[in-house]
Image (cartoon, rainbow, N blue to C red; front, side):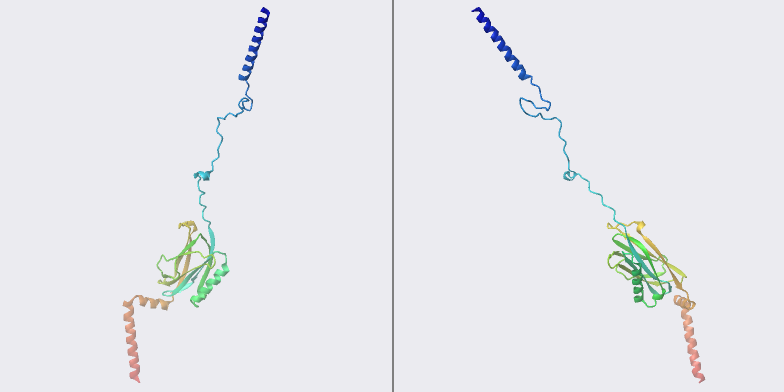
Length: 253
């Protein structure tokens, strides 16, 4: 009897130890190296936020590309002017512009224009060709700082949009008002950009010198015309002398 009780106590103690061991094994199960718990099978959430990409155009904060500067283009400008004039005479100054470098065509066109304006101008006209800068428009003016000419523009506008096919034409009629031996007139060419601004480095100034014919007979006539206080008595005296001379001839017959 006593021996049976001892056996039961020993068996009960062994059973309790086995349960304690299993309980300890479950509560201390190790975590795997990939961070997954074997008991739950879930992945723990990382505390580091995942990087996000931002599209600059989508956010509306992207800066627009800066405007590119306008391209400077080259054109060929030809101009003609009279070599010599006399006071009170009217002649023409012509300008013809092509965007292509066609010097021969420009010279031929100017020669044709000059001949159409006056057959007398054809042999006494200088024609020169030069390069100019342009963007969209060219403004060409004729400047007479000394006031030696009366200038009348024949073209519609000094400022013209460049015609890339047929070219552009300017013309002025000029009349001398001086008896200087040589006088100067200036051709000013200004290239204007799309926004209306200009760059002084793109401008071109062409100095044109014209000789004035100072024939002594013509100068005497101009003197009488400019001084009526002198010319009127001389004219009256000449008329009186002619009348007396004619009367005398008739009386002697």
